[in-house]
Length: 319
Image 1: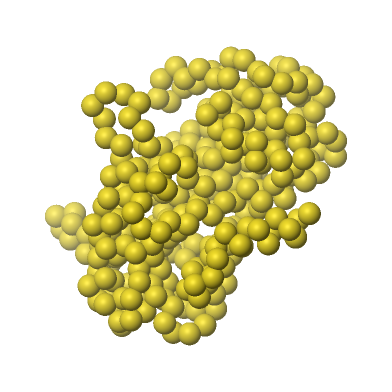
Image 2: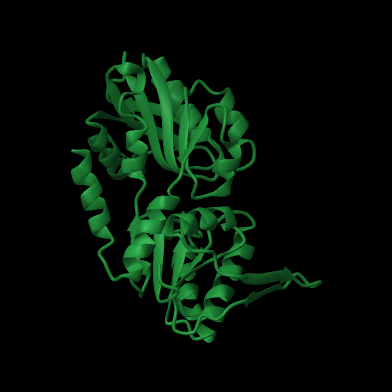
């Protein structure tokens, strides 16, 4: 591809960016970065980007605040170096779960991140399966949201060799899970859970009948794994033949991997939007890469082609 397209990696996404660049048949851009003695970050774009169409990749992995600041600095440095357009590629959006004011005197941090990206000079944002769709409305620049649903659905086409139903581990995710169920041609089961505190949940009630069925639990992310494990327990108590799980983003904080491995889940399928998922691959955890999908979206944006058409074509090819 022409040298006017450049892709740079933030420190949270070096391996992911390498896979994207391999699919695009280009080399990742050169960046110098360091930490000073006072914990301040330093970044420098180590090649000419004047007039280039630049994509900078960074994902919300720990330390989240450090990676967010680094992304803002990279965007600002690229704009200051006269890049023609700078697109922030954020596979897992920063503070995506802080999308509403559900308590008094708190920040809507997902909107604040959008404001910070704009202040840094970003021209466009490319992300995947936002925790809440309204986050797109926080952006004043064009924002493309990719989805991993078709890719994940293909992993469960013949789950268990029998009748498959899809379960929503959270009533707030029903719309997204319904789309996943539609792609599998499966019925939907809904689990009503009670959150005891910020880190503990209990699955209380079940809407639908999983008896004798092979159930696929679906959510946009797995954080500590508690919701998935509790939902699996309730489904098996109600006669499910087996339970597997799928999620787009594998946050997998603290002892989540151990919790999932010890659970009754048959398998857990994640994408590689976060390095934690790739590192946990093996055992029950399977990882599918969305790097080729991001590469194709970047190619389409660079050539001013439709990104939504990418999913329309995939939809048609799967029929």
